[in-house]
Structures are given as structure tokens and as C-alpha cells.
Amino acid sequence: MVFVQITDPQFGMHTGDKDFAQETANFEFAVATVNRWKPDFVVITGDLVNKPGDPAQIAEYLRIKKLIAGSIPVYDLPGNHDIGNAPTPETLAFYRKTFGRDWYSFRQGEFAGVVINTTIIHTPGAVTAEVAKQRAWLDTELASLRAAGAKPIVLFQHHPWFTMKVAEPDGYFNLPLAVREDYMALLRKYGVKQAFAGHTHRGYRAEDAGIEMVVNGPVGMPLSPEGSGVRVCVVKGDRVEHTFHPLHRLPNQIR
Image 1: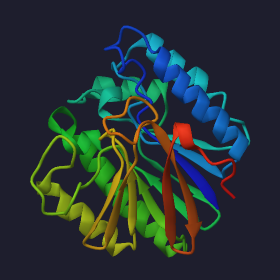
Image 2 (image 1 turned 120 degrees about the horizontal axis):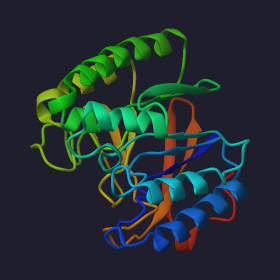
Image 3 (image 1 turned 90 degrees about the horizontal axis):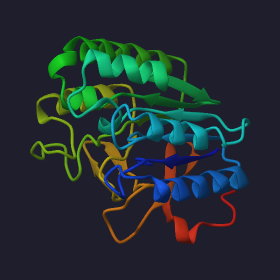
Image 4 (image 1 turned 60 degrees about the horizontal axis):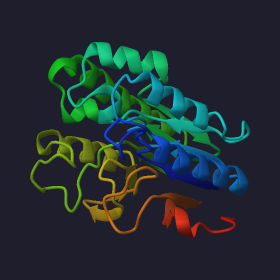
């Protein structure tokens, strides 16, 4: 089984929301490549647009997303630029009406993907009830998937749990230490060994406390020399092997 992770198309970032020509070019090229590769599914891990609620950016993201072949399932999720750095019940409702669910799970054979909304975990202020609902659902869903024999169970999210180690201080690019250990314990309890994220606009991986944190570089504007690209992921037993490919060095085939 092979899947592709795309993150941070973030329409409008290159020009500070003046236009999104570069994001269109990058995302269209990535989608054309996905259609040629024919992976089993695609996951888009947030920051779909740059300006929350912008109708033109949203329309362009949805237009290009629809170009992905109908035979290839696509799963996306919100980033902080989709529901705001400080999400509210109103921004969550808008996201759900416009894009769909912000937390859910899916199955592809034995593989189970679990999608969560990390922006509400990062800045829970006005949406603490939603954070509690998602946390309770995550516990129940992981237990159900484990009991059903799913393997591997992989988490997909926007913010990384950590960038170097679980005990690192809080920052813009990770999730709060005050809740991080609780979630890490939950993942270990149900055998989750890998989580895939975006948000940082640069790619890297870190492993601590039994969890591999895979952070994908963006298909949109990069903040590192590796440039824009996508990640090809191959499921082998209870692990996912993965490689980031810049848009200017995409392989001809992935199987």
C-alpha cells in the first residue's frame, strides 16, 4: 500500500494574499503527479489556504483538489490558517460546512488513519468543549481500531507533537507540553507508533518516547532549501516508510 502526504498548499502565502499563482502552479503539478502515480490514497495535512475564510483561496483549493482522480480517496484536515490561530465555534462551523469533518478516521485494508484537529489543542481558548469532545473520541476510536486488529494505526495532524523531543518547551511549531504527555501516553497505549504533520514549512523527523514524528515539507511556500514537495509513504507491516520528494525531483513511479 502506498499513499502520498501533501501539506500546506496555503494559497496566498507567497504574495501575502495578493494572489496565489505560485500555489496554483505547485498544487496543480502535485495533483497531476498524484494522478500519474495512482497511490491508494492522499492525505493533505492542513493550511489549505493562507487567509481564513477567504472565498477565492478556498475556491482555488477546492477546484484543484477535485482534479485528483475519483478513484483516489483524499483526506484533508484543518490547519491554523484554515480556522484561525485562535479558533472559535464560528470558525470551526465554517470549516465543517466548507471542507467537511475536522476529526475522523478511515480504513484502507488493515491500515487505519486517524485524523485530528491540532489547532484546537494548540490554542483551546474559545473551544475547550471541542477539545474535550475530540480527546474523548480519540480514546474511543483508537481502542476500537486496536480491537478490530487495524495495523498500523497512524495519526495525521497539522501541528507536530514535538520537533526534537517530547519534553521540549512550548512553541509555535509544537503542541503544548501541558497536554503533550497525556496524548503521547494515549498513543502508546493503543500502539500508535507514527504521526504525520506539516505546519513548519520544512521537513524533518524526530523520534522519542516510542513515537516517530514525521513533519512534511510544504507543497506551497517552503522555508528551507529542500523546497516544495510531497511525501511518498509505503506501508510495510506495522510501519510506514516515507521519503520527501521535492517537486523538481519527483520519481517517475512509486510502486
